[in-house]
Image (cartoon, rainbow, N blue to C red; front, side, top):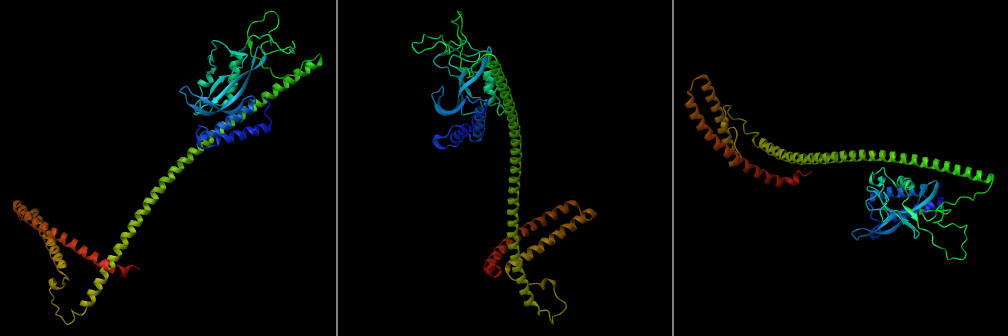
Amino acid sequence: MVPPPSSNHQAIQQFLSSVLSQSGTSALPYSEDTKWLIRQHLLSLTTTSPSLEPKTATFTHNDGRTVNLLQADGTVPITFISVTYNIPVIIWLFESYPRHPPCVYVNPTRDMIIKRSHPFVNPSGLVSIPYLQNWIYPSSNLVDLARELSSVFGRDPPLFSQRPKPNPNPNYHPNQSSLGSVGNTGGGGGYPRPIVRPPQYPPYGSGGAAGKVEAEDAAEVYKRNVIDKLVENVHGDMLQLSKTRQAEMESWFSAQSVLRGREEEFNKGLKEMRDKMEGLELHLQVVLMNTDVLEAWVKENKGKLKGASEDIDVDNAFECVDVLSKQMLECTAVDMAIEDAVYSLEKAVQEGAMPFDQYLRNVRLLSREQFFNRATAAKVRSAQMQAQVAGMAARAPRYAT
C-alpha cells in the first residue's frame, strides 16, 4: 500500500500526541507506561492501512459504563473471487490495551447485511478471529491484526450487499453500477454478493492500453509487497530493540537496588562511626579529668617522703581522698584476698592436704563473704560514677576545645 502523505501522517502524529498527553478528567484511560506503545501501534497501522483512521469516541460497556476510547475506523481490503472489496470495520482499543486484545466490530452500511452463521462474526458484528483469541503482549499489534482480518474475511466475507431496489432517480444511467449490482450480470441475479467498494482503477481501453494497465497493476503489486516487507522488517527490528531495551532497564533496576543497599550499609556504618567518635570524646574527657587529678596528687605529695624513714608501711603508703574511695579499696582488697584463699584451698585439695568436705565448707563461707564485698563494691562504683559525671559537667567549659 502507498503510505499516506507526509502532511496527513504528521497530523495523525499530532492528534495522537495530543489526546494521549491529556491529563485530568479529559485524559484517556490508558496506563502511562503503555501510551507510547499505543501511539506507535496506531501510527504503524495508518502507515500500512491508510483507510483506517484513528479517532476518539465514547464506548458503552455491557455494565452501562461509558468511557472515551481510541478507535481505528475505516475499511479493510479483501480479495474474494479475484475481486477486491472493502469491509468497513471499527477497532476499539480498550483500557487494558495492549496487554489485552482490542475489540473489533464490522460496521455495515445501510445497504449491507451481516452473513448469518459466520464462524468469526456474530449477528451484532463482533469479530472473534483466532489472532484476537491468541493475543500475546507485546508481540501482537494492530498491523498484524489488520492483515489477519483481510485474510480471514477474504476466505469468507462477513458482509453482503442487499438486493438492489429500483432507483426512482430519473437521472440514473445503466452504466453506473451500484454496490448491489456489481458482479451480478445475466439472468441469474437475485443472489447476494459480497459488498463492493472497488478501488479506483484506470478504465480499460483497447489494444496496448490494456497491457499498460496490467503492467501498472503488476508494478503496484510489487511496490506494495516491497513496502510490506520493509514494514515487517522494521517491525521486527523494533521488537528486538524493545526486548534489548527492556533487558537493559532490568539490569539498571538491579544495579539501582544494589546501590541502594550499599547506600543503606554506608549510612549505617557512618552512624556507628559517629557514635563511636562521641564515645571516644567522652572517654577522652574522663582521661583528661583523671590526669588533672593525678597531677594534683603528685604535686601535693611530692615532698612528703623527703626525710622520712625508709621503713614505710605499705598499707599506709596510700591515703584515700574520700570515704567512697576508702570503702572501694577495702572491698577490692578483701575480694582479691578471698580469690587467693580459694586458689590455695584448691591446691590443697589437689595435693591431698585437706579433706574434700572441709574444702567445700570453707569455699562456701568465703564465697558468701566475697559476694557481699562485690555487691558493696558495685554500689560504691555507681556512686563514684555519679560523682565523676557531676565533676565532668562542672569542668565541661574547660575541655570544650
